Image: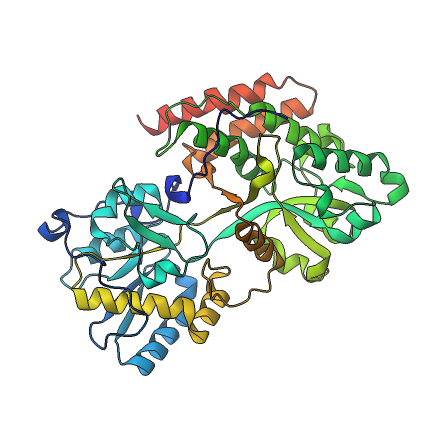
Length: 447
C-alpha cells in the first residue's frame, strides 16, 4: 500500500470552481457596512417565522425555477412572509449577481459556490455558524469558510461518484461488499473474477473507453483521486502553479486494474465505440466507475438492493476511512447588507426548506440529495451509500479536479498520454502530461 505523507480531512471549502457562479465576477464594491463587518446572524436563525421581513432568492438553477416559484408561494401563504425568486439565465449567474447586488433591494439569499466565490463575495455574507439551518446539516463537508473561519455558505445539494457494483454478480463470484475496503482487497476480488471470467460469464470491470464520451470519467473523476490527496497534503486553497504528481503511482495501479481486469484489449480503448453503461446493464461486469447521475438509467434494470457504490480506492494509507467523492457548487449564502428583519426572514425560510414536508419534498425532487437531518428520502440508492459513509464518520473525497487549469486542454494531453500507455508505451508519458502539462496550462491560463 502506498504511504501518504499525512492526512487531514479537507472540507469542500478548498474546492475551486473551474467555471460557474459568482466566484468569477466582480462584486461592484461592498458597502461600508460590509467592510466594517455589517450586521451578523448571531441572534438569528430561529425555526419560526418572525412575522416581518422578506426574502429575495437569486436562484442559480434555471431548471428549478417553476418549482421554486411554487414553493415560495406556498411559504408566503403559510407565513405571510413575501418570498421573491429571481432566476438567472443559464451561464449568467455571475453577471446577474453582480448587477443585483448593486441595487437597493439586493438578494437576501444567493449562491457562493466556490472558494473563489468566497474571495469575491465573502464580505457580503453573514456567518451562518450556529443558525438553525446550519445546525440541521448532517456534515460540514459542503460548507465554505472564509479566512476568519466564518461559515460563508452552506451546501444545499451534492453529487457523488465512485465504483458502481452489481451486487448480484459479486455474490455469484463468492464475495460481498464486506470483502472490499481498500485497494488491495478490491484488486484481490477483481483479479479473481477476471481470472474466472469464462467460468462466471462476466468480468470484473466494464470497458474504459477513452473517446470523448467516456474519457472524462478517467481524466476527470479518476484523476481526481491523486489530485485530492496531493491537495490535502499541500493545503491547496487556490489552483497551484505546479503540482508534484505525488500520487501518480496510485493512479497507475488503479488504472492498470481497470484495463487489465476487463474483457477489452487496452490497446483498443483509444478508438472508442465502447458502451460501459450498456455493458453494466447487460450484466457483463461487476464494477463500473460512474456517479449518482447514473441511477435513472440503471434503475430501469436493477432494483436498489442489486446495486451499490463504493469509494474509488487507489492504495493510500488510511483509505479504509474514505467515503465517496462528493461535491457541489450549490451553496446558499445570506446577504450581510440586508436588514436584520430580512436576514431573519431568509434564515427562517431556509430552515423551512430543509425541515418541512413541503420544502424537503421539493428539494429532493429538484436537487437530489441534500445534506440535512430531515431530508426527504431519496430513492437513489447511490446517495444512500454516500450518506451511509458520512453517517459512519468517513471522510468525503473532495472534487479537487475543479482546480484544473485550462481543464479541457489538460485533460486532452492526459488522454493522449494514457492512450500511448495503453498501447504499450511508457507510464512516464502520463506523468509528464499530468505534471508538466499542469504547469503549462497554468501558465497559459495566467498569461
